[in-house]
Length: 137
Image (cartoon, helix red, strand yellow):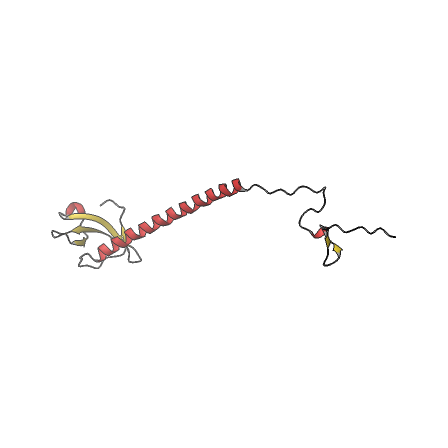
């Protein structure tokens, strides 16, 4: 009588009737290293913090750009709705004033030569948008 060894349940596949220990993604014998769960909470917390800071910085950049665009939109609406009797030249600086009735008008006259309420100076760029002038009037 032959002594038949019963197959180990961990490594014997009953469907294929073969030993498949080498195909398992985990150790199958007692001498194998223990499987331990890696503590990745600190890694997650660190990266969550980094991601949140990165996204907040990106949000603040986008918000600043959006606020700048709204300000430019307000300038353009104000100037295009102001009174002027000339065709502005691209690249030239013009000055925005309020007349005696508080109505805005655009002029080529510098603020030191004018008695009206000075609002600001602007120039017309190549895209036909009014940009606040940084030069001193």
